[in-house]
Amino acid sequence: MPMRYDLAGKTILITGAARGIGAQLAREAVARGARVALVGLEGELLKRLSADLDAHWYECDVTDQAALDAAVTSTVDRFGGIDVVVANAGIANLGTVAVGPVDALVRTVEVNLCGAIRTVSAALPHVTAARGHVLIVSSAAAFTAMPGMAAYCASKAGVEQFANVLRLETRPQGVTVGTAHPIWIDTDLVRDIRDDLASFRTALRRLPRPLSTVVPVEQCVEALLRGVERRRRKVYVPRSLAVVQALRPVVLSGLTDALITRFGGRTMVDQMEDEVRQLGRSFGRTSVGGRS
Image 1 (cartoon, rainbow, N blue to C red):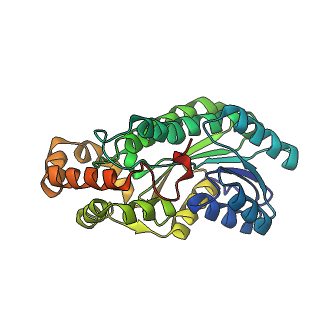
Image 2 (tube, rainbow, N blue to C red; image 1 turned 180 degrees about the vertical axis):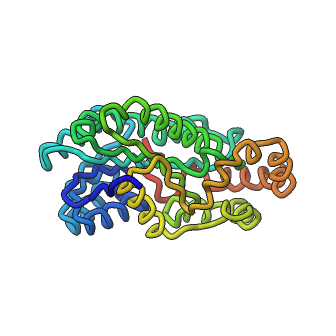
Image 3 (cartoon, one colour; image 1 turned 90 degrees about the vertical axis):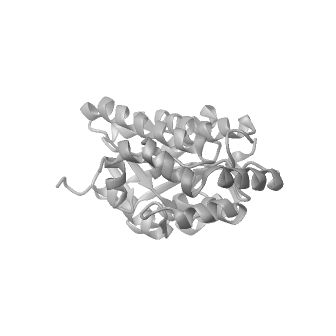
């Protein structure tokens, strides 16, 4: 087992830090003695959390490279460097490809995948200098498929492959790279989808475990921080998802397609599309990442 990477005194930059996994990760990291930089879109939430934690904060959109570069520079000015970057910012559009709009699908990919690439690229010189760690939050969606999640699944699969190659590129410099693969985490993002779409609630009840599991955010964050402290390549939340990824050829096979169609099928897709049309929006109620 590798030597524990003690977070005390380390500087951690976290994107998507205003809510959910990012905010809880910041709280727990500070409790372990880390210095934290909070990056996200909701300035008031970031400001309040920063005051509670004596953390640094910077409001920016992860699809804006100039703003991200400024956030990194501001963090280095405050703390002198960056040891760990957690690329956590993510959104999920509502509905199928057919009901679009296409801008919502593209925005999901831009935030989840391009945002992770931009975040890592901005912070990497400082993480390299510190021989630190990069954690990119992917998802169980990287190796599963579900109607209504085309852009989300595509972006999270892309995140995993980006991290896999980055790991090979940075290993000679002493930088370690991990991906986190959570299932449904009890955050605003998941609660919004669950509240908005009865079709999603039905699908969640019918999915087998662990794919139907909703995990408390505290449990997810504990697993993520343990992954950083042990500089792990993969973090699964819950751990049983490792088996699902190992069985990816089966999970994404024609047999699974038939099973999903059987319990969902056109009726489920029709219901989802009707619900999204009635909502009149493409993102959850609290999702600022979907706004221009």
